[in-house]
Structure formats: C-alpha cells, structure tokens
Length: 137
Image (cartoon, helix red, strand yellow):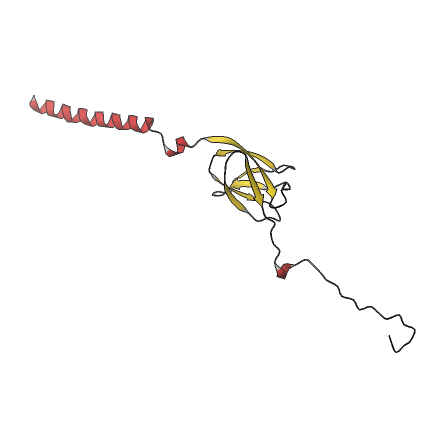
C-alpha cells in the first residue's frame, strides 16, 4: 500500500506540472501576438521639390512582398505593423528603407546619372565664313 501511494504522488505531480506548463503556454502572450497590424497611410514626394511621386512601390524590406503602389498624388495605404521596415522605390529615384508609421511622408531623391552613361549629346559644328573674298573663307 505504501508503494501505491508513492507512485500516485509522483504521477500526480508530473500531471500537475504538465497542466500548469500547458496553461502558461496558452495564456502567455507571444512576441508575434503583441505586434498588431494597423492601417498605415502615407505619401511619397520628391526630395527638395515636394512634388508627388506616382507609381512608387511600397514593399516589405525583409521579404520584398509588394504592399501598395502610390496613386497620382503620391498617396498610399497599407495594413502592417507599426515599425516594420518598408522599402520605397520608384523609377528614376534612389530606394529608401523606412520604418512604417501612420501619416508617414517619404522623400525620395532623384537618382544621379553616371558620367559614363550620360544621355547628353553636344554637337559642335564649324560655321562657314560668308565673305565674298575667297581668301577669307
């Protein structure tokens, strides 16, 4: 009878510890559960000019998942956790990585052209003299 009592007590303790551990895992908030998605609105403008940048792409910096594209006024609306890193890019501008927050305004700088890939062309043409004297031509 003493042997049965000892086994019962050890088994009961193990069950109680297991039950309490399970309850703690269920009730304890996880790091993922604490971060809540919210609606974030913002705009993308050109640095220094403050002109809207239409068709800028807003994506997650870590995974590259596209979340939104700006409208003609440079505005966008996404659902994400505040503070998550976003990559903002647009054709002709340098990419930027920014932390998400509601009401954000991202100013993109124009991409500088490389001197080896310059699209500027300068034509120099020699003008002919119009003097009637053939020695001055």
